[in-house]
Amino acid sequence: MSGVTLKNLNKTYSPGSTDAFHAVKGIDLEIRDKEFMVLVGPSGCGKSTTLRMIAGLEEACSGDLCIGDRMVNDVLPKNRGVAMVFQNYALYPHMTVADNMAFGLKLRKTPKAEIQHRVEEAADTLGLTSMLNRKPKALSGGQRQRVALGRAIVRKPDVFLFDEPLSNLDAKMRVQMRAEISKLHARLNATMIYVTHDQTEAMTMGDRICVMKDGEIMQVDEPINIYQSPANMFTAGFIGLPQMNFLHGSVVEADGGYHFVGEATGTDRIELTARLGEIARAHLGKPLVLGVRPEHFSTCEAADPQAIHAKVEVGEPLGAESFLHLSTANGDKLVVRLAGIVQSNIGQSLSVKPNLEEVHLFDAASELRLEAPHVVA
Image 1 (cartoon, rainbow, N blue to C red):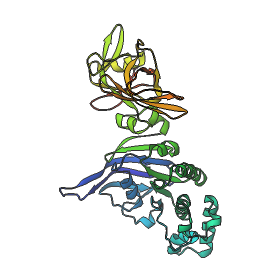
Image 2 (image 1 turned 90 degrees about the horizontal axis):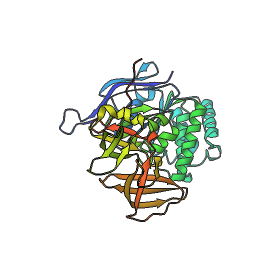
Image 3 (image 1 turned 135 degrees about the horizontal axis):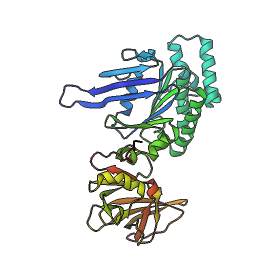
Image 4 (image 1 turned 90 degrees about the vertical axis):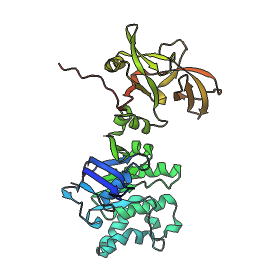
């Protein structure tokens, strides 16, 4: 077993001083054996610090860190059974590809025949066989990253750790390397922990995603579940591109149903479905937030009971789809994604309506997503 378990893990820099920084705040996380777990969040959220504590490059201030059945808090990095792939490749420029991949094994005094076998096997897996005698300066960025991967593979670790390994690559190469790392995970059937700030990488690569903010875990779940059922406004806004739209207001009961009303007096009133009305019933008059993803809007007539009236600020026709940046009467900003090429003019009036089957309601104070009350039979 090579899963990783974090229990109440804390990391504070300069503890006891006036400039102390609590980077990781008592997180609990279980990474399953052979799972591809992605830690995602904005800069400074604690994801890289967490990865470095797992690797042993940072010392945890408190909490338990287990790899498999071993507690490794006091185990040296070289004895933890992990291999790390860094953002900047960290290759020796004077060594060939083969020597770079073999260097760690030589330090461990692995027999030469075993080293050669492992290097050739990894090179074949990564498509590097014809490049084993080259030096890093003769390689492209993507090839260098594959060498860094090969150096990790030859060690046959229990856990692979990736610290934003694709951030130095161009957009096309990132797409290619995402696919290669995913295929590598399937081929090696190994536990992998991957840190990124790119939510596209998180959505496309992870078996599960751990969303972090300010040293805390916001949500852990499968990518599609996080996208469709975000636990809070931070996760809802961070996962998805463009991010989810948030309309601020409250819900009132009128005309035999429930209506979402914008904060400003006289602004749009959206008639809610029975599902959303059931959710909102216990929160009437309280500040709420209506969350709608850009792709869940469509244009409509101004008289539609779900219509939101807005003006176009920017139009972005991209060919297969168009993004319209809108401003509502009460100052809410919306991004709407429409199929095909949609021509628009700045200042143009436009009515759009949300697909209420895909809408979320959040409590404005706690920022937690509201769910329908459970009925006890």
